[in-house]
Each structure stands twice: as C-alpha cells, then as structure tokens.
Amino acid sequence: MKPLIGITIDRAASAAPPDPPDSPDSQDVRYQVGPFVGRSLAKAGGVPVLMTPDPGLAGDYADACHGFVFTGGLDPDTTGFGEPMHRKARKMDPVRQAFELALLDELAGRPDTPVLGICLGMQMMALHAGGKLNQYMPETHDHPEAHQKGADHRIEVTVQDSVLRPGDVGDGEAIYSSHQQAVSDPGKMRVVAVAQDGTVEAIDGVPVDAARFYLGVQWHPERGGGGPLNLGLFRGLVEAARASR
Image (cartoon, rainbow, N blue to C red; front, side, top):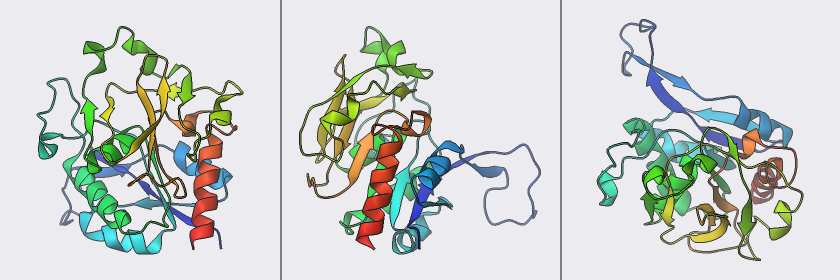
C-alpha cells in the first residue's frame, strides 16, 4: 500500500448558506487547499489525505498517516509565543493554528514519522520548537520583493548532513517564494539553507537529527520543477514514510 500523507488545509469564510443549517461547526466556514501539494505527493508515490483542522483529531491523524505536509497560508498568531503580532500581519485561522500545534505536539513523540513544512508550515515548526519570526520583512530587507508574489531566487545549503543536500541546488531549479514573514530564530531546530540576503530558507531537526526527515522550507516546492529541490522533497518524504511503516 502507498503511504498516506496528511495535508493541513485552511478554514475560510464561506459566502454560501450553511448546509446543514444545524452544523456544529461555524456556520460560515468552508475548508480549502490548493491542488499543488496533493498533485506533487501523488507524483511522488504517496496518497494525499486532506485533514480537517480539528485539534481533537490530532492524535488520530498521527496514528493513521505515515507522513505529513504542513502547507502554506497566512501568518501565525505569535501572542501565545510571547511576541505581539505585527500590525501588518495577516492572522491565520485560530482553529487551524490550534490544530497544527496539537499535531506537532503529537509528532514530537513519533520520531519515525516524516514531516515537511512549507512556508507557513516551516514557520509553525520553528515556533513550536521555541523559535521566533521576522513578522514583516519589508521593514528589515532592502529587497523584500525577492520573496513575494512568486519571486524566484537562489538559495545556499549550509550544512552537509541534512535531507536537503548541497547538490540539490546545483541545477538551477526555480525557488517559488511568496511570503512577508520569515524565521529569524529556529529555536531547537537548525538552519540548513539561506537566501543570498540571509533569509532563512530551510530548517531541520527537533532536536537536530539528520536521520529523520523533519524539514521546513520557506519556498513552495509544490510550485517548482521536477528536480531534487522541489519534487525531490516530496519523493524524499514519501520514501521516508514508506520506510517508517
């Protein structure tokens, strides 16, 4: 059987009337996620599983799935981590945030389960590990546009022993970025790649353990090419999930 890979999804306001009208969930909420992560996982040999963002189900998903992708989205609420939110931060759905933190709690006790965090997903991994965020890059970077609206730029892998390898960046694959926040402190995790302007592009390990596939990347590999830096990350995740079953 192909490994089941859980994918975090978002909650958003819905213009449609509630159906059924007595739904126990918020009556103006719908679930949503783009198709690209699921397509990449399917190409990599996994079975995508869209996870309802319910904190009470975190343990059940951790039991049922063989690997996980924490997807992109809006900005985390940092107040629970001792930092006020920047006035220009775009607050993510609180139920989604609570679910993802509960799931990360579960996965901390399951060191064989592989995890890939993308953009917001990487930032959530860092916060969960005691890290901090740069909450508004336009105030701290001379050229923040290099990381926004699908911008392409180059990265450098700075370690030799991560699942993200220095040779993976050698063929000039595109780095599709779209973010206004970034990891400034990885906490218990480790920085493994940076952009030319110093922006943290990848982190791994809790604690640092190169044998485990526990990787966060700031770009969107699901929107990149079919090489090792993009589709290769999904293949690595699926292979690690298959080996851990």
